[in-house]
Image (cartoon, rainbow, N blue to C red):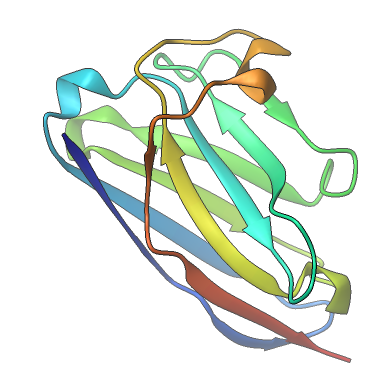
Length: 126
């Protein structure tokens, strides 16, 4: 099993920035592609971004492209989400996810994702 713990959420004004972290523990050798998803109140969970094991391939939802950046440090078993130019519509619970398979391009969106964190709240005020 792989355990994922997100941190870094909080309250920020529109136009501000936050950096989320996701620390993996347990059988981290089973975690290859990593992704971030989010769920706003009353809405379905949606894909935000994902990254391959090497970090050489990433994929972003159109809504965050150019504002969010995903990265990872395999030595620390941690994946990051740098969020800039935040908008009120970015308000959601952000979840980290890990896949037992690696990915490339669109495959990073499709997953599947096998392990999930508990989520961290991001609130953007207008």
